[in-house]
Length: 73
Image (cartoon, rainbow, N blue to C red; front, top):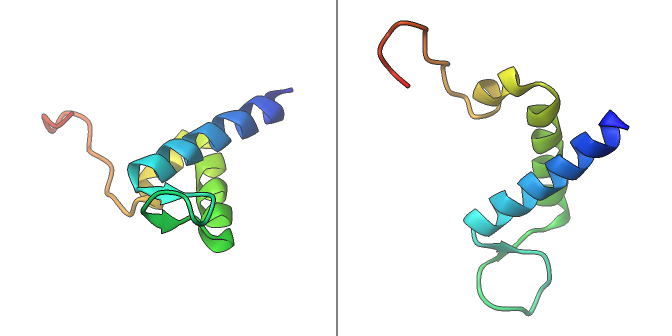
């Protein structure tokens, strides 16, 4: 059951990312870049990884995590 929930959340997250990046899933509709197979599979896999292991988000984004107590939020 948890896997179904994780997969649903990952799919919704991927849709949010697509919207924020101006990607579209259907060719010929509006303007913007098409979310091709490669983009969809990679982005969904990253979203699923982020949902299953939230600590991996910084690694996915190649960002050094903020250290505790350094004043950053």
